Image (tube, rainbow, N blue to C red; front, side, top):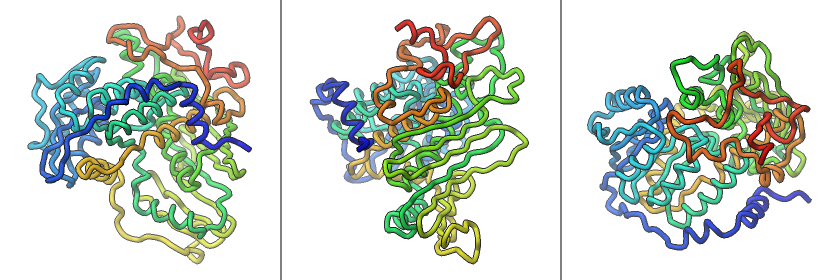
Amino acid sequence: MAASPSDLVLSRRQVVGGAVAAAASTALLPRAFAAGDETINLALVGCGGRGSGAADQALSSVCGPTKLVAAVDVFESNLEGSLKGIQSKHKDKADVPKENQFIGFDGYKQAMDLLKPGDVVILTTPPAFRWVQFKYAIDRGLHVFMEKPICVDAPSGRRMIELGEEARKKNLKVGVGLMCRHCEVRGELFDRIQNGELGDLTMLRAYRMAGPTASAFSEKKPADIGELEYQIKRFHSFLWASGGAFSDFLIHNIDEGCWMKNAWPVEAKASGGRHYRGDYIDQNFDTYSVEYTFSDGAKMFLEGRTVPGCHNEFATYAHGTKNSAVVSTSGHLPARSRIYKGQKLNDKESLIWSKPGREPNPYQLEWDHLLDAIRQDKPYNEVERGAMASLVTVMGRMAAHTGRVVTLEEIMTHNHEFAPHVDKLALGGPAPLLADQDGKYPVPQPGLITKTEYADPAFAAS
């Protein structure tokens, strides 16, 4: 009988040992908000589009007053642009004087040091830095909102699970930016699936097929920027920084499918490839096709593509022994979840259930839920779920990049870490990944390189 994901997490904890438990032995009690009228101060660590959006949602929440007091990024232009946009919408809630604006890798410490225990730090840097900054937030007694994915490889995922337990023991509230889990109509669909309205759930299908997205396609590094700075600026192009386009974009479809199944898959086999590359030097495949298998034999099929001029689709579907459902229609919002009789999806005559009307924004709901938990001192910790979603994503990505069947049990013990010294990186210093003499980086070679996702001399020498 295959081990469950929770059993695998426990076995990993036994391997790691009791270091985290010892570090968390003294519980920290965040300040209370019984009256509901005390301002929660915020620090923004990572001023890209997602960080700016998260800060906007935090300042827009109706769950008591919030105020942005510090911001940090490695690029001054990002910081300035972000603050300008935030202050244009929240003039009285974004008070970040120049002395509270920090540039550089250690800026997160300076920003968090301006907060009091019980305040909130927003972690929206490239995910490679997540565990480093999360650890410091826990040490400072801060509640946390962090963007997904929360890890890029197996070792950092296991580390995040351990840190999540430390945060829980200190009564710190932690939100993870898998906002679809906060979507009300998806939530009702989940309840209906669990109540048997689809019968036994045997298959899920997930698609994110579009053109080139964000910084996933990159050309050779210009001469006027350092190697490390370039890789961070184009972080979707590099596996160490983001897990690549697969981890950063496909995780939402993977997570909402696993949510509907109410389980994590235990195995993945996959294929993928690079096509019309031209001068692009990034590490991504242009197509990914993954078959996930759950412990009961049910399947989830994932299709990802970033090739222009092709059929586009951004949706997730569920199929049961009685009926079928649309989990999400086109993107993250609105979901327009609905159930159909039999397998005739989108057949009006077969529609059984839908939820017409305007859907509340899940990006806002995740912040409302987090801030309400802080003020009312409710249990709130999404780290293990976020880590498992990230690790299941790593499992599918690794299966495509190596050409092997990869199990969740393997992921819970795999020891290849893309950037083991990420906590020691410094502006102007060396990058975790080196280009060759032509300015190109190592790419996955399925069937040829099978123990790791690309040729990594540092790992081979370890």
